[in-house]
Length: 209
Ligand code: HEM
Image (cartoon, rainbow, N blue to C red):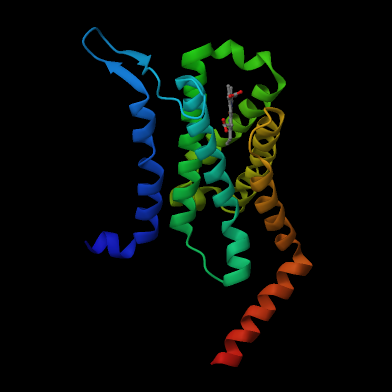
């Protein structure tokens, strides 16, 4: 109980990230009777989508949502002064796990080599490659080991969101809302704007006290 009390933010992220996995599992039939064989459940798609399209949709949407959320942590801190490294790391892990799952579905359905058949897949693939080191260094030990390089490494997340948005935009799926949220975040990060906002927030706090 004490663990949950101290880490409730982290626990909420874990629950939100894990629950939709059950939706994914409900769309496939897993048969263990003869080794491991996975097949698509029939008619699990919604809104005219096939089951496979639905799998891409759910996994891709969660991947981009978590990526947007994790990149919104710094703007959130600038605006409200609230930050939590543990929650941020959990969000980063959720981003990577959903993205890897999305890609795993693709490899399972179309094969790895198909990744290089379209430019938008290649953009997604580079984003996945970037997420691998980010995923493995999203912990305190790596932070301590890499020191200032850790921040530099994490800034590759900017390239990952750009490539992911490109991937989704070329596919003509929902991308604008994520681009706007991330874009506003980048405006708030501009040093001049950031310093003004933080100074205002601190000024407000001292005037309340
Ligand atoms: C090798 C990497 C990737 C491959 C091969 C891939 C492949 C695909 C495919 C086949 C679709 C479905 C296209 C369609 O229905 O017409 C899709 C959709 C999508 N992908 Fe990816 N993807 C990759 C990486 C990523 C990454 C890194 C993200 C985000 C973090 C992402 C986010 C999305 C989103 C949001 C959609 C649209 C889902 C929808 O609304 O239907 N993908 N991707």
